[in-house]
Amino acid sequence: MLDHFRQTGALLEGHFELSSGLHSDRYLQCALVLSEPRRAEALARAFAERLETDVDVVVGPAMGAVVWAQEIGRALDRRAMFTERSGGEMTLRRGFRFETGERCLVVEDVLTTGGSAKEALEVVRAHGGLPVAVGSIINRSGGNPFEDEELPLTCLAEVEVQVWEPDVCPLCAAGGAAVKPGSRTALAGGGA
Image (cartoon, rainbow, N blue to C red; front, top):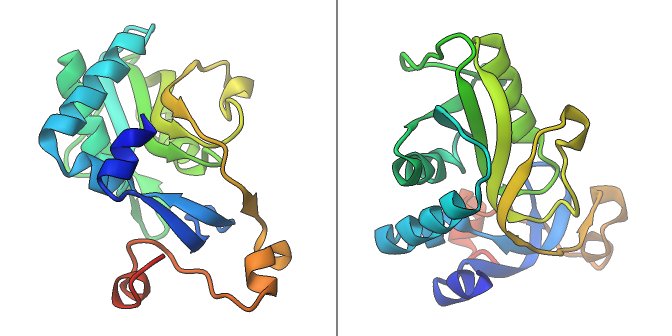
C-alpha cells in the first residue's frame, strides 16, 4: 500500500501541522495518490473487497475525502456525497440528502484522530442517515476511533507515525516551523 505513496511522492517527511492541530514528522498526501485515476480506482476496488458491511451511500468530509468517497461509491455502485464546512461547522449542502434510515459508510483519506469523520457522522445522523461503518485509505490513529460508537473500521493500511501536541513537539523545540501540507506556505516554501 505504501508503495503507492512512495511512487507518487505522497509520503512527505519534515515538520507538519495536521488538520487535528497535532504536529508530525511525516505526512501522507492522499491527493497525489488519488490524482491518478487508475491508481485511485484500483485502491477503491481493493477497499470494496475488504468492506464487510452493506451500505446504500458513501459520505466523505471535504476536502480530503471528496475524491475518495466518489471512488468508493463507484467501486460499490452506490451514491457518493460529501459534507463540508460552512461557518466553521460541518454541514450537508448542494442538494445532498438521505432517505430515513439509509445505511451510510463514512470515509476519510487518512485517519489521525477521526475528528472530521466524527463530524461527518453527526451530519449523517442529523439528516436521517444511519451510519453503519467507517473507512479510510490509511489509519494512523493506532486503533479504531469509532469503537465507542460500535462502528466497524475498514482501512487499506495501518501506519504508525509519530504525532505531538504543539507545546511538546521536539521539532518545534529544535526551532523548526510546522507547515500545513497543501497550504500556500508549503507550496511556496517547497513543503517538506
